[in-house]
Image (cartoon, rainbow, N blue to C red; front, top):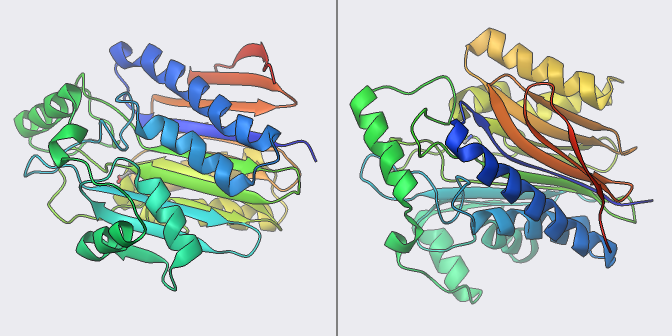
Length: 312
Ligand code: GLY
């Protein structure tokens, strides 16, 4: 089958000043991942490449540019799942590596466990040859501004993204490769002003990430505590398993979560047949996908732009 890749760059009250950078970043990321698929790379390799691209980009809340906890530190988390055999890899409380998604992928391939955190995740990464970076090098000026804004406001909003200039967003990717295998990857710095040691939805399989070749794949973004209570990614998968199409399943699960728990989220979905679902209950969510070699992207409600054919 023809490969398809879809990415998101975070849902929330994204300030206008961050819109263009996010749109540029999701278009770059989707092309990076799609390149892998066009060279017969696996869906797993493609979603990792797309997420790596956004982890390097300070317009996103993942890797460099991750938001800060109450101690002013970056604590990142990521997960990746293969729909072929339901293999998963996830990491949390990562402080000194640029690409948590690559460590999560290594957990999937090389560890008997599914989720490693903190010191144990660091030890695993070092054993596998990942290079540390100074934790301060992951902190952007926008992340500092977002923490200051949070401290002034003194409470969390309904989204993961604050209204400050530092508003950024979790990243994710869903792909289907030429063999029909589906993979999903999601990576985040969490929420500005989170408690030290707080773990959100992103590394929790079924909340931030889910993939099953027999049904489809989903990556979510938004208010972590709500997403994990609702098992948002798996809720969408369950609706599709019961016959709901990708668009309706994504919309119904996201709106269902928001009406039950009040906070907002977004999700990107791909069915095993290549149907796409994109929905967010927040004001904005950056997304992009390539299907039939054509790139589409957007960030506002009910907005779709077309970039034309992707040169291969
Ligand atoms: N959705 C990212 C977080 O709340 O951790």
